Length: 206
Image (cartoon, rainbow, N blue to C red; front, side):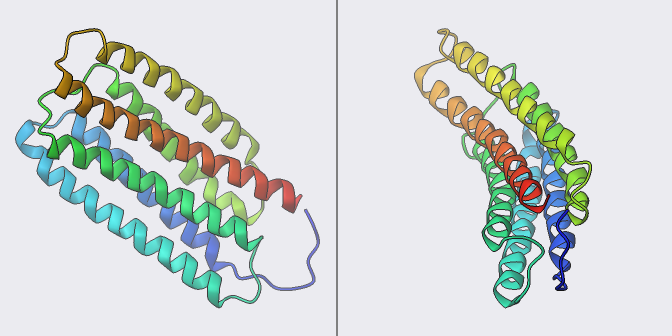
C-alpha cells in the first residue's frame, strides 16, 4: 500500500458501509416478497420504497462529503463511481418490487427465486467487503465471487427468458414478467460494477 504524507477523510468508509448495509435490507425485502401473500405485497413495496429513499440519502451524503473534502481516501472519480453503483443496485431492486405490485402479477415464474438468492448473496458479500476499504485487504475473494455470481445470474436470466417464451404465457404477461426479470438482471450487473470499482480502487492503492 502506498505511504501517504497527508491525512485523509475517513467518513467515506462508514458511508459506503451504510449504503451496503441498506442494500442487504433491500435484498431481504425481495426475499420476503417471494413468500408473501398477494395482499401483503403493497406493504413490502412501501418498505422497499423507504429503503430506496434511505439509499438515495446515503448517496447524496457521499456526494456532499466528496464536494466538501479537500483530501479523499482514494480518487474522487472512484468514490463517485462506487457511490453511484451502490445506488443503482437499490434502485433496480426497488423497481422490481414496484413492478410486481403495479402489474398485479399473480405468480412469479420459476427461477425468479434463484435470481433473488443470487442478489441476496451478492448483497451480503458487498456489505462484508466495504469495511475492508479502510485497509484494502481481504478484497480479492470478494470481487472474484461477485463476478462468479453475476455469471450465474446471467445463466438464470437466459433460462428465465426461454421459459417465458415457451408459449405458456400470453403476450401481455410475457411483457410484464420479462421486464421484472430484466430489472433483476440489471441489479446483478450493478453488483458486478461495484466489485469492479472496488478492484480498480485496490489496484490503484496497492
